[in-house]
Amino acid sequence: MLNIDLHCHSTASDGLLPAAEVARRAAANGVDMLALTDHDDLGGLPAARSVADDVGMRFVNGVEISIEWEGLQVHILGLNFDADDEALNAGLASIRSGRVERAQRMSAALDKIGIHGSFDGAMCHAENPNLISRAHFARYLVEIGICKDVRSVFESYIVPGRPGYVDHRWATLEESVRWIVGAGGIASVAHPGRYKLSRSEMRCFLDEFKGLGGRAIEVVSGSHSADNVTVFSRLAREYGFLASCGSDFHGPGESYIDLGKLAPFPQGLAPVWEAF
Ligand code: AMP
Ligand code: MN
Ligand code: MN
Ligand code: MN
Image (cartoon, rainbow, N blue to C red; front, side):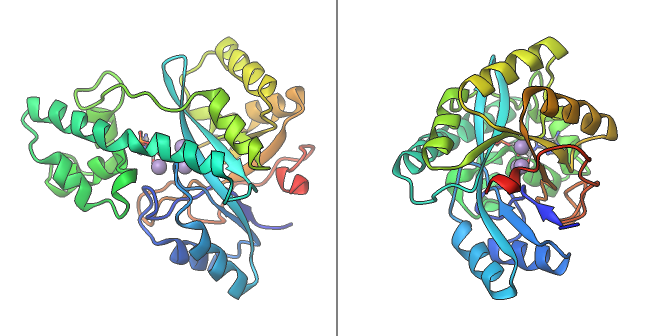
């Protein structure tokens, strides 16, 4: 059984390790095929690929695109695309350009509840300033002692309904799939178990995704429960989706599971990597 991990992050987005180190760690953990899937940015791919080539690990171009669907923030993975594709790169640049302005609004919102200096503080945690993320704010709030860990910061301050959360216009579902497919890649719904969607809303989302050319769904994820795996295996079969799997590793101590330490891939699914 091959060890396959098609979802993880480096300092090119909100991961804690540089891309080369992510690839080295994956290889050390026994990964046979890795995709680096930074949020909205392809900057880490060359360094990760170079390490993968050196150590004889298969490497697949990846990205995790931030979109908004019916008011909800959703993530769409792009896998095995041409990283030089112009429309994909322009589209990702357009999403990134809104992040700094959103971070300023988050900082202003946190100011109002007495948490000051969070824009500069979060920026100190961001290797790639264009990719300033809620994760960097969370690390800053932990650093100054507001919460004990990143997860508590999200729960108390920066998810919808909490004082540091601000709305933001991401890409649309249609754009994300068009950019990925246009670059020759496969679009996969990232960690579908994480979204606050009812069963009928999830079906509505998957119908639309499939209609637009989406072909895969992430069944095994570091943030999925065993129940999630069962539910999304069933939906993958029903919709005729390919199945992808990934740790969603962000860094030691901050992620549920490490690179390559995924739950088993369920029987009877069509693995996305067979289409690469
Ligand atoms: P952003 O793209 O800036 O909105 O930030 C989203 C990122 O924050 C995700 O990719 C995760 O890395 C992280 N994140 C989101 N929700 C949580 C949570 N509840 N606990 C910890 N990290 C989270
Ligand atoms: Mn992230
Ligand atoms: Mn995600
Ligand atoms: Mn991710």
